[in-house]
Image (cartoon, rainbow, N blue to C red; front, side, top):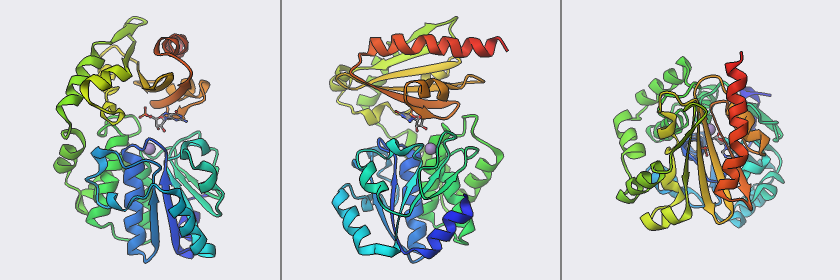
Length: 332
Ligand code: 5GP
Ligand code: MN
């Protein structure tokens, strides 16, 4: 199934619930808000749902105020929509990424899945999975073209933010010539790159910089400096008056060390609950390491989550697998 199949359902139906993965990143928020704006222009009704409030850093995106976090509102909307209703999940690599209300949202038919994770099993009724796309936002741009829609300045900002954040500012291996073509079209449609960069990357509190200082002090290097590990504890966040939103993109610092092939960021999200971000440069496929622990993601950017574990335990479990993954490529 494909882009055409998704466009077909959008032409047929009238009311849509749009959602993305929990702990939404720029691609999740930008894709949802960008698509919602497109559906408005198509004369459709769109309800945007996230189980938690939109992260502060993404609230400048046009339409962020329309997001609802009450699943009851979603259920009422779908009941009223009846045959005219559809649910669209964006940037969710598998069912569980939909989050706390996975069962409520996926009980509806049809569910449309639009995603760029290669491991996506296609858990919807209509699926468009495009692993070569650098971001779900890039796919939403293609959907607009398929539907014959002009991109509004508002949607252009949302989709630009999605692509900029999911490619690490056009640095990751997923960035293709097509990614730049889409970005250029979005700039023509009204996204200002300098303004977007200031909003997305130069818009933090002093506490975030103090937190970065503490986190970088935890840096450890392994396997002839090919692996870099940093960590954040709950206590560090409390001391700097920061939240988990403030650690986004920290993993790019250890990744920037010349010799590093795999960067690891261990995050104590709550006591006993550890979330791991993995980033690779070159050939090592970190999505396989994340998948080993029930996580997922892309070849160069992946993650997984542990419950009832300490930072040291997770560190001890994950490091041997990364060394093995790097050795496998060194042997080639
Ligand atoms: P991040 O490190 O920015 O949180 O996530 C990087 C990539 O890994 C994203 O594409 C995200 O979808 C995926 N990812 C992160 N954490 C998890 C997880 O706990 N489970 C799964 N399945 N994927 C994850
Ligand atoms: Mn994405």
